[in-house]
Length: 326
Image (tube, rainbow, N blue to C red; front, side, top):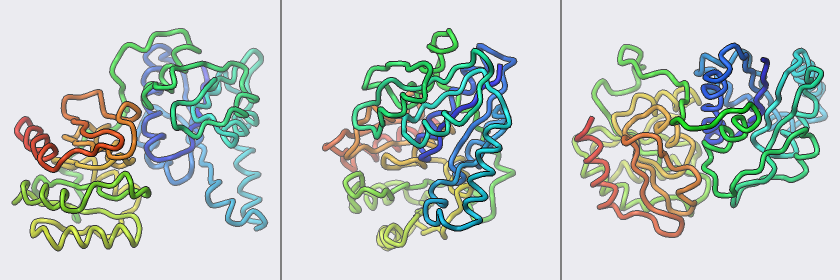
């Protein structure tokens, strides 16, 4: 059986789609699985050794210069690569017009199927027009967890029950592979940055947490100039904290993978730490916890709720509890 997964973005959503791979291969061990993903997340999918071929999609870059000959050539090359194979099943688990168009262009064998979501989850950007490209649309409860959505769609289409914890297929951390820019000792990483201010946790809370963890080193990554300024402000109040240089996508993944403790708001890198089964505290302030909480390991603690972020005391207690059990 040849299967194509279409899940192009964003970081957290691509991560949450990974357990589909293990599920499919558990029930269909001879299957081959290819994946269409936004080019910035190719390196994340590549960490899963069971994905045979990754087809990069670069809409974010192409749309900035659709009139450029080199971009038009890349788009033509993308569709040629997409159509090189005939698949038994194509899954679109994102449910957008752009992913529907990719599904529509993909080739299936005679009798092959194109399977997607019949509806979105609460608060999602689901676009109903994506169903136009389906041969089969799977309905789900609007409050289905982000990890479960793709798993349930595949299970319904391929005839198996989803009754095991999710397997992300990510490699375990190896101390011998720790890059030079990381401390030799255990460290905490604070994933404090996010594009939406309402999802952030108050700076005084981060400082209280960092002081409670001292002398454990605290690393502060950032992804924009604004987040860098915020990280520098936190570090000014924490003698055990260090602001990191701008990281590549894979450096950020390594940062999460190797952490002795990860604490973060509802953002992709926090969820990556949880997928690596690192001791992780996930902080919810302006997004529903049911949607993305790490619920597959006792090494993950989820605190807060939309409109009700946790106190610093709650997070400090959770962090100390996790560190005591490592």
